[in-house]
View 1 (cartoon, rainbow, N blue to C red):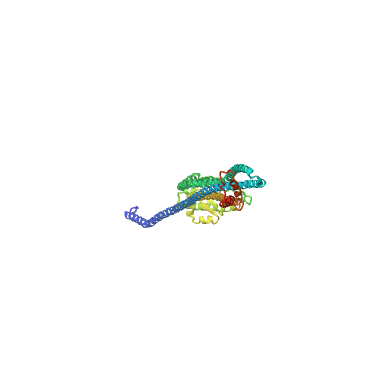
View 2 (cartoon, rainbow, N blue to C red; view 1 turned 90 degrees about the vertical axis):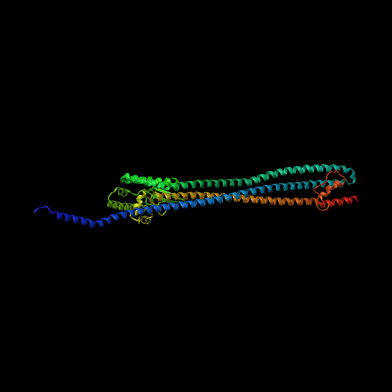
Length: 496
């Protein structure tokens, strides 16, 4: 008998082996299907995360567009108010000029009447004294009276003309100086108001253009920063100090892209002194309006994440991912103990921003531990990556622009108040001019009544010179009707 197994036994063994393979095939296929399903679920989750970020950016763009529309509406209202103020000011200036001319006419009439009253009163007294002393020589004095009338008329005309010219010149100078003193500040404030509104309009136009460009370049900048950070982190090969320096460099690039100004709106590596004698040095302090500060830390270690990217074994990758999550939590715990809010001179908010320079590193950590954000917020730490930090800093930059605009609006309101006060003063002066005109008119009418009313009034006595035979070629034009009637009655009585 041969020692080799028979062909039947070999065939039977092969049949059993094939049957075993066929029996195990469903299990193998199930494992392969599960592996594919796990990979597909991971990709779907990442796609959902990126979609959420995209929707957030779209909402932010809509908010910016709504703000731009509101600013355009405010600018339109400001232009309308400016046109109304300008038209009203022009009308008030024209009215002031008309009132000044009326005042000049009234003062000229008043001065003329007063001069006539004084001169005629003196002349009348002299004539009465002369007539009483020389009544017995009326014939001889007639010639003297005629000469006196001529001299009186000439003197009266010369005196009235001189007084009229002098008063008119003085009134013109005083009125011009008063109106210039009132209207020059008004014109200057109106000019400043117009320049402020035009500057604000130009600033709004520039900022709208900048905002559109920033929204367009936001995603491109975020993608470039993430790719650069990932490539350099892979090249660092676990050097923690080099990773920290790189994180600070990425943070500085994000700050530059945010539009904030160093020294005014943020500071780098500021050495401070706490209450315990320590000297903490925050990576970045971002200043907010109303004397508030925001601290940013960029010293998180990414060594485990870099090793995970280089690992090929799935089990090793899972272990390194857990180590990466633990490293982030350790840094959160360490950062929460620094108590930046207790440092004198630092008015920080209730939380600190922990900056992860590689966006994918933060996404992987949150995917592995979905409570990581809650864990950090419970310790007053907020986790941010380049895209979320850039959006936050852009918001801070926008808050600073709003603060500057509010300051400009307060200055405009202050100047508008001064403009209103000047306008009120102008109206008060115009009211005073009107009252002066009314008083001048009353004085003028009173003087005319005193000169030409009552028995033996002054105008009637002067006109008697003509009736006595004086060589008069003209008759007094200011003689009222009542005075004329009395003069005619006296003349008829003399004829009788």
